[in-house]
Amino acid sequence: MPQIIVVDQSGKESSVEAIEGRTLMEVIRDSGFDELLALCGGCCSCATCHVHIDPDYIDKLPKMSADEDDLLDSSDNRNEFSRLSCQVPITSALEGCKVTIAPED
Image 1 (cartoon, rainbow, N blue to C red):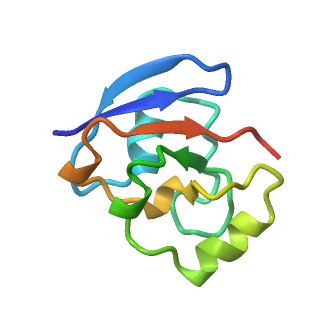
Image 2: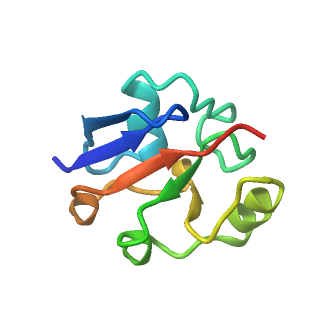
């Protein structure tokens, strides 16, 4: 079970266990981070689960879909390491990854 480091919007870091086969959004939400709204529940139809992925891990993720890319375009806080956490599957390759919850738009 990989350990993921989640950085909240105030900058506080917390290590959480991530079950493989779940999404990063589910792990963050179920670990008590209320600032990750995830309003659509993981359907890739909003951008309220926007996170910034540790640059060392960005190439270990699946390619971004056109839908995810379009949704992230609506965020003023998008950067080159932005992803929707509902589109990031948990795998062992994410062990030690630091994920920062993006500020709300």
